[in-house]
Length: 333
Image (cartoon, rainbow, N blue to C red; front, side):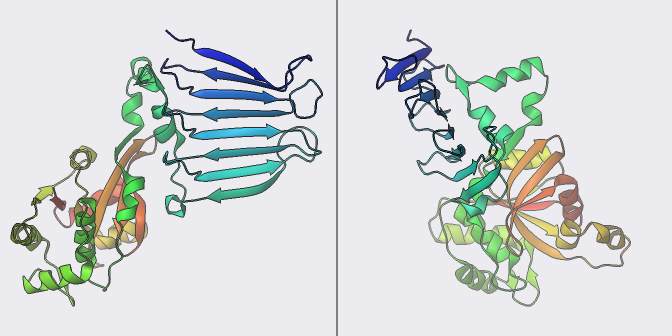
């Protein structure tokens, strides 16, 4: 078995402190260090004036995140970065300068995100902590034995941040189901486009540009056109009422269309009036791309062809919005 900790020195090591010391931690004993801690003496003072910490939580010899403190200049600087999706490109980078001499950054100098589509979706608990492994097993899975239900509390179903890229804006006021259908095809690697789907759905009497789509007719039409095109894809209707129902659909690989009431989905204050019959139904179609379950309760992540990608909504709100349409959904597989 290889050593978990390795220590290497570099440069001039004749003084009290060498020019460079690198300490590596290989928790998996796979030859790749998951943590690299380095100390540098750039000023020749026999004391470290630059410290860096780099993390490789996938053990693929490609760093995922790092932070560096550089006190070799008149003002120390701190820089942090992260390769969030492990593609070799830095996605988030921030830095700051210390002007008071306490080594803490007082003035932020940069903050850059390479992928604006993520917005504020970075979630260290859900996305980073479970990725840290020991002997090829997630370290923090063991918390479930010490804190019952830990893994269930911090659960994510589907791949919502990646699937935000499936979003397609609806072309017309009543074409939400057409755009959502195109997003379902995109999730399977096809992109017929809304214009073609609109024409096909109109020819089949499923979609009317002036009144919208009849959800009950969508599944038979999709099966017919997939068969005619020779695609190994089938459509099916489903009903949902619980977060577990939606999690099961997502875990099957489907990114389905949900029939909902847009008024109830987005306007809290209008729900009582709607339930009393003072506001009409606002039929709408969205794509479900994810479900998270945390301390604030279950949240669903939707691609809404009218509003945008990755819309996060409390499950209770989605429940109210889906109730008027029988909790109806359509999936492609």
